[in-house]
Length: 376
Image (cartoon, rainbow, N blue to C red; front, side, top):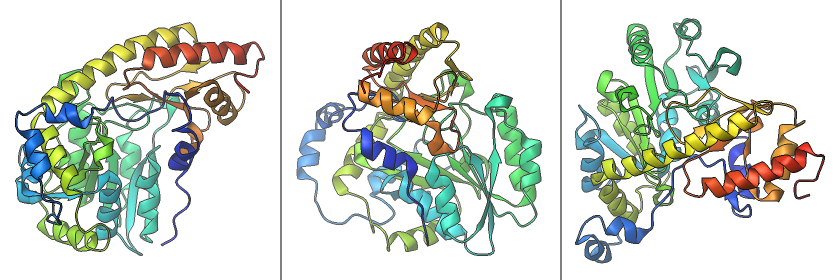
């Protein structure tokens, strides 16, 4: 297995903890442990009494019950907990793919969704969506990618980095395509629950197709990345068995305190999602105003879900250089080159300090526009 450097994480390794404002974050505003414990009267005492031994490789029973409640047709034993979504992506790909297999991955995408598929030795093709087409979901183009030897399709709904979302009719057609062709659907749903219009929320793939795998996490929509808890949900028992067998070689089990806190959060999931949706929608209104003031510099397809968008940048020269200058001025955007889309930046608007971050960005852009150094 030969993996290239993870460009997004390398970029954040350099800038995330030294730049004052993260205006590219893919997660929502987080909470403290104390805030989580306040959700239930005896939660603090339970956490302090929690045993710090190993937990079940499939996940603590209470957490699996809380996760299963998110879905319509999934039972707790049909959930496998992972130490973050990243581990789950690794495990699913290596459980399903190997040399001689073929997969199709929706792009642009979070880099691990593409590179971990390639790491299995499988042939990997992209289903590329383009800004020039307003990130349209061209299922005819996808159909041409789903050759008879294709065994797996990865999609991400709602989508990172564009914030786009299929409509229900398109999703129904996609489900029909994979079922008709015998393709396994691997559906990354870590932003599910952050649709701006509740009626836009799609069914979980595992509730529509018994072979499909739904990927979830408490990191993004719930704003709890520090817990490092993700999961897969699928009716496929043989696949779950293979994923657990592989997990015995990675983490064996998740952190016991993290599982306890994640279960607590998910029992109050609607409350956490409501707060984060409200914050995201309010911040999106502020971003709309910002983009209206800078039409010559930023153009985007307005997101429909999630805390991120992916505008195209004009008239500023090299985007990577621009982002480095903005970071020096105190505000971090993510250059689209890490998605192989070098004319774009990822904007994140799930954090409470967005108004302050936007003020710094506008001042820094004025410096760039006037020929200044924008902080060096």
